[in-house]
Length: 172
Image (tube, rainbow, N blue to C red; front, side):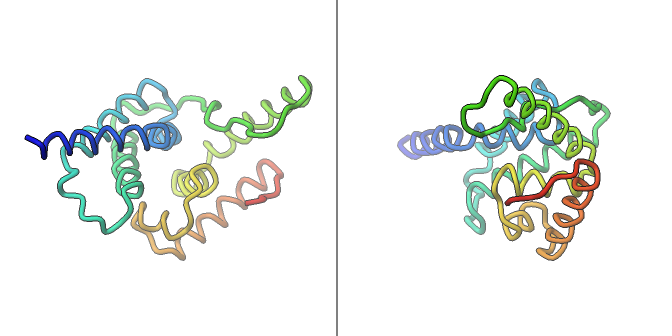
């Protein structure tokens, strides 16, 4: 009985620590709040069912991200998928601004979000994982089961596409 309690406590801790990150990651794929919540539940249900199979070959975060990405991609392949606008994920994290500066910033973030979300998935996912989830190339390669060189190439090409469409300089 104690073992089940420990598993439940571990699972509660995992949900507490990673819920928001998993939601953001899923939303970056599906672009719909309702769908994001459904897939998030599936991710944590899968994690709960398979926590005993977690071998520790990667970090817990990487394992959860892998489940979330796979479930999100499965959804994108399904007939349920449809294109929706995406704005809230890219919120400005800057300091206090005037109303005018805030409006300009919000508009710029919306435009950037549209440009990023219009990228092919293979570039979009790399950009989002790198810049908005602060994962490095090695972590992304593990998550997506790609060579590190492929990740770096896609990151460079994704940046180039964004630069051409949005005219920005990357600071990360």
